[in-house]
Length: 313
Image (tube, rainbow, N blue to C red):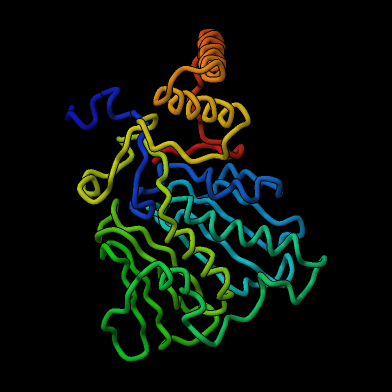
């Protein structure tokens, strides 16, 4: 048994992975289902599709293929029995946090639509301007590459992710937009593909999630060996810079006392100075008394995931 497959507690350590688009799927789609956790879930015992989450009227369908190359298949139709107007697929390497960009936008569109609204935003025609679909990427500094006539390609600043728009294809089911990340390979290349009639704002929502600079949590063994040199791994719980916050009234009082004491130290000790020093002494004593009774802070944990069954790859 190799060192990689042998049980090693270090390999199961949770780490923050960045950039997120190179983090892989982690073997579960929980993050992608969180935005639609309140929609009906249909668990399927047979067949490659193991779970289907649908909008209440079943116009939007989110399929999870736990043991397939195309792990996600998401569609929208005019009604429950019509052919899909558009399809989005995500392969088994795509981080579910990127899928969540699309499912979040779908949940919002559905909540804003009237019942059986044929003009629902999730059924809108795509923009005639291809740039609208990838604006979050260009805003994040992705740059245009040389491409064939009728195609457009952009790459991330680190050249480890990109988007291909193919305007040469025709037909409602033509695969015209592809987001990718990672070097070519079964366990390394993430792919998200959209058909021709996918609304531009839904592609943009997915692209915005892909451009997000926030790291995601994985266990070390979930990072493909070929990706280890391309990502930054930070153990969860490591010291991080303190975020700024507004001062509390106690902070203000302590600061005022401290400044007054410093001023008093540079001048003769008058009666007023002595009162200031006494106040500083009482403040320090109260702080020590309170800190002695505080329990250690618990480490923050990510929110509970949806009741999606886990399917290890």
